[in-house]
View: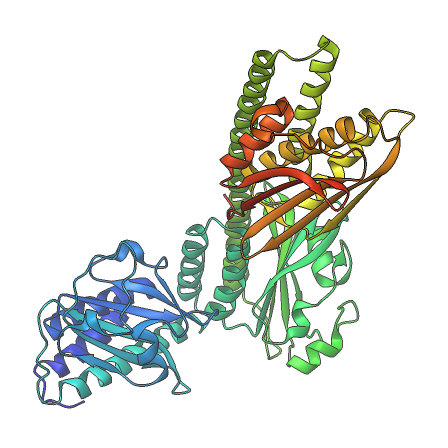
Length: 536
């Protein structure tokens, strides 16, 4: 390293010393970031490392360590990726005015002078960056830029060497790898992310060629592949296996680790061709168990025939147990969120039912109590149709066609007079709406169908009712048309509409839309248009 810049050689010695006593990647990166900040007489230093998704992840920060693992920069965004993909970035002043400068929300650091230099792995490929900030203009001394580049290279070499010691097989190092993976798993509340982290970090820390996780589908009693870091796409397409089938199924059935010396020759192993193609030899399958009950299997493969020492097996068992707990915790979080959401929805919808009943009481135009109750039942069924669809579709989206099909089925059964022959047809896009809009549209559609049947076929004994759905440029249009009795020529929606149409008008305005009803080409047409909202 050049000695033009003061203290460069002592810094390298300090960086190497940090590797000797660090207990994990995070400890090492954190200490190195502090040393570099002090060396550069800067205000802060961050170290970001590329993950398996080609995303730069903050791993060390001298100013906001609480953002570690949370701050992620996607490929091609910002100056850090410019340093990764093109060349180091050195800005003497007004860094925040650079066209590619990006500020992460909540990461409050003022930047005037900036240096971002890449780190390189054994293959001389960039795998991360060292980012150094100053709140004042940075007058780069002679040779300082070159020294910063070399320091980043040294940091990369130290990190690679540190990881290599984790993989050498010593018990203490295996426990360190276990600690690293376990800590990362507990930081994530999302099931898919937990599984992907598990296979990626296990493969990385234990130097395995391939890691996979299969989880139990209790309904089918099958182990389904849920995550793998294998580069071969064929792994992602591997079929589900039954409990007791192949090595993973056997480990699940017997609830114990199973080791295979050579998967290419093992008769019970399924997938010899793929194993040979990928150069896989030895394998260990470890069950993931909660309270002694297996819920999945972690399978690890090596590229050479070897045995798995006792300390490595124990580390994998402990890791599998931690992963199982994290998986169960993620599922409980999802259930808790679902319950809260469902309680919220039920409360809102009961309030909506109460409002509709009060409106109905004030209207006072019903000829009988039976008719009033029948209308109320229809409106409650419209809301329940949305809840029924939510249990079968996405958590926060319901298809408008599905709502229409459900309500048409109800209207045909409950409201159609025996001497009427009316054919229903649903056309158009299956527009998906969030929960709030779906409930309001269900009420609107219910009222329009009731209106079409009750007022469109008083004199006419047969005909058609068409429901058309369309979405254009974020606006949803809904038409309910009938070929029966026309709208009276002197009909004024603002003065003559009954309660049902008043509800449609009120809900349409609440959606930020508009409602009209008129005769078109011999059909009575009710039209509602409103802007489509995003998910809740």
